[in-house]
Length: 286
Image (cartoon, rainbow, N blue to C red; front, side):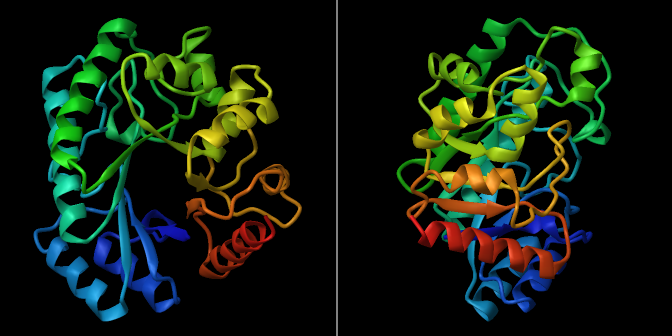
């Protein structure tokens, strides 16, 4: 199954984003960040779900809070930590209302990021104590796992460590879970399902001087849930991929027939359709 991220459409409200995708013929939509809070978003999502027979699943920073912040379940700041848990609990509650069955969040950070830095160059900050941050994430995960119960399957998504941010942080990595070794580290603290963002991995391995094929070979068999887009290997650009994409060629080596994909390509609707067809093709060829 292939979902399209609502973030692929740049609008102020989730209603507009979903309606654009639904009118383009997409029926599986992943509700993600990028839109503003408003009071009737839940009612609108239910109306659109009924009108277009939509399948929803939620991701990370959705639904958007009234006061923007960057979700960080590893934060040592009590306010941000509580906001993060509350957002996750609200997402789980909404998932149940919308008949969603999955919810994935980004692995935590050893810093707290301002909303205007998300996805961009991050200013230098002192890193949190790693063990304390991991322990914090673990405790927060237990809280949201209890909230999810048996109804919602929870996932942790690998973070992206860009070339630009590596220059700011020199030899320090402020992000948890950016590689296979980061996966093993987090597994020592948390029993979680992996959401593998292949585009994030493509950037992070370059920054960390790791081999992409080797990392993909270790991580891909660990999950059935994958995020896809393309980039230059230096920054997470959410580009559409071409037929000649090395990433697609690498994925063809694996059995993808039972995987769940979300396209996060911030491009035209036509490009999104083309990319969706490409992914369906490699899924059916396995």
